Length: 200
Ligand code: HEC
Ligand code: HEC
Image (cartoon, rainbow, N blue to C red; front, top):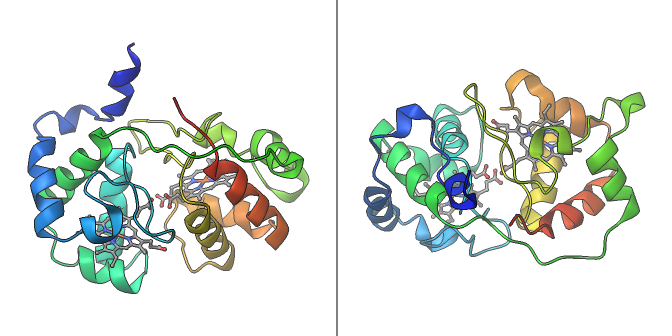
């Protein structure tokens, strides 16, 4: 399978969606103000969306709209989006180049947790779902999001939110279970480590 095909993270229901319609909606809905037209994430707290799995993006937008995921700005931004808008916007961002980080000095603590986890504390290895380089993985039942190369500040915030339960929209609460055991130091180390990945 050529590498470029991985950038098209469709499942079969996406076949009819045209990314260019999403590009237009990103502009008319003002998403680009914070996420950028290509999804590079213009502020450290505004996540990169470029190359993210389209079905994951749709789910997050649905969750912001339903209240399953809470954030003052995003709740307002997602409020008026229709199913078509979500699909088009996700198709646009998802079809752009994968997010890339700047390699940081590998922390042994972070590398260990990422690749091996800590079974004694219910910390499953991040790698087992998010992939070796944080590139995520796709399944027909829902994707494990790309986290490699994401902004470290955003990653830290999400891990803290999973730990405190402020964010609780992962299937089966899996991310809450994992993050609950992590210390501040471990979250900081993981966020820095993961943000440095270059996916391709
Ligand atoms: C004023 C800034 C701002 C604007 C405008 C904005 N966003 Fe966001 N967006 C954010 C922030 C900040 C977050 C992180 C929320 C959190 O911490 O939970 C976010 C999160 C997201 C996420 C979740 C990504 C992930 O990795 O889980 C998606 C998807 C998203 N935004 C899409 C959009 C779309 C589509 C629009 C336009 C309709 C939009 N955003 C407009 C700031 C913004
Ligand atoms: C059993 C599978 C699994 C494991 C293991 C796992 N995750 Fe996750 N993770 C998920 C799923 C599923 C989501 C998406 C949840 C949703 O739908 O909002 C997620 C979401 C995330 C997010 C939010 C991404 C975003 O764009 O907002 C971060 C950050 C994250 N995981 C970090 C980690 C770290 C760090 C580890 C290891 C300590 C880890 N995960 C281990 C399944 C897993």
